[in-house]
Length: 182
Length: 256
Image 1 (cartoon, rainbow over the protein chains, first blue to last red):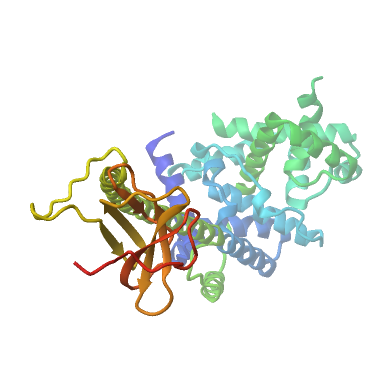
Image 2: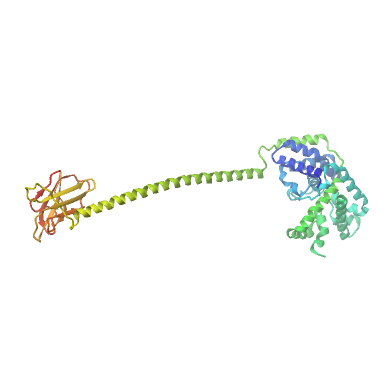
């Protein structure tokens, strides 16, 4: 791991540690760093700024109330926040109660992927990987992630076999991983 | 296909939160027993987060920040998080317990020292008393032993006279009596010593029969404690002794 990556990860961990002690300034700092990702995911899923703001508020308040739910040793903070935002937004979209406790969510992302200095590079890799996928695969992946559809629902919409949808979704996630770790 | 491959596609769906029903139950049961698949699930969630990053670019309005910070201030925590409090509470208890143990240790050390000193004192006292007891026994043996030689020194022109010497300690009821030059008695008779109190009847203080040299003794006869003696007296009684004098005293004591 590079020094820059180590600094970013440890700083997020330090801020979360400060939040555990009730440090409101640390909470503001974390919001300034990661609110764009949290808000963007919610907005992409819900398509409504007001609803996305509610999700943004909900996600950060959960971090404030239960900062120990995030384990800095097992993933990056923006990735963890993004997954929680996505899950909350999908729950709202599908009008269902939250299914997963935030303490149960472990998001394992290589620290090198999310270091601040290379954030734009990472986004470029992600978007490049998505652009390079077959349309059917990218569509299945995005329907599953941004719409929260089950593979059965996707198969019904696309007319593809269930097994094919499953395989495409998994293959799409693995392709993203490979693209970002190169 | 091994177990991991069998669950590979379903793990991806579980990471996206879109696996339901029996398939989800089956995968979750496998995850409880398979660390490798739990690790793969975490990585797939990381992959999903990368997908989330692809949505980036939108910036929340400034009011969202104000709203959040106002809510945070409204739920301000003065104390650390609950787990921290528990740790602090537990840690405090541990320190208190350690301090109590330490205090108890020093208390016991101090008490042990005091007890050891006390034991040493008692041992020294006991040795001293033992020595005194030995000396007292030797003294009593010497005074009362029939083989002891008794010498009565009187004026050279005065023939030997019957004589008795009583040493009495009223507060403990202890009496040592020594007699010399006592006339021999017929077998059916015996000398009886009496404690004559200041008030009340004479109290029997022992029987004695003089040896061939006329010497006799009474050592620590059973006497009541604390009786002040006016004097001591000797009578001649039947050989079994009498509870009260049956004859006039042949000898009476004077304080000397």
